[in-house]
Length: 150
Image (tube, rainbow, N blue to C red; front, side, top):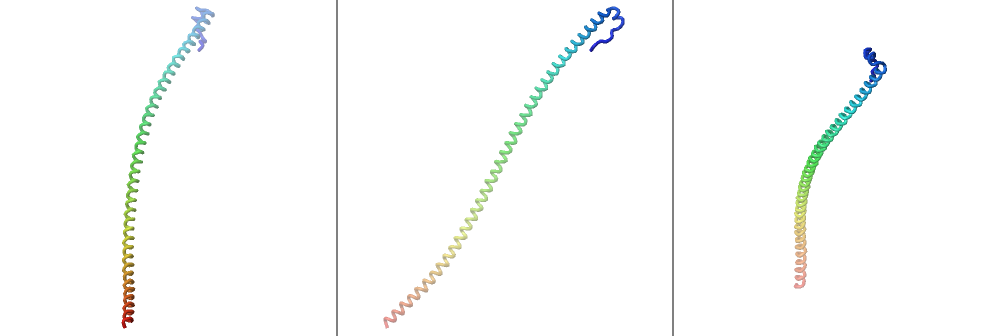
């Protein structure tokens, strides 16, 4: 910032060389003041950036902790849910195996009953045919004995 005009009273008292020297001195003082002000502003800016960086780091760390905690909770919930589903599936498998076992037992019992009935019927048929064969044999023997004894 350059000073362009100097009041007439000062110009008369100082003279042209004095005015020029005064203007140079004031310009240099303004330049130094500007540099000092920029330095102060730069320090403040750096301090603020540093503070904001630290605040952001703390905030990021807190957010990371919260997210880690939440992830841990969700993983625990999922583990519990998986355990419950496995238990449900185990129970269902056990029930299905028991149901199939009962069905197989009933089917085997039904087949055994049917086989026993068929065997009994076959035995009765066999005994009847054996009886008919014995009666035929006895009849034949009796007839032969009558034929020889006569």
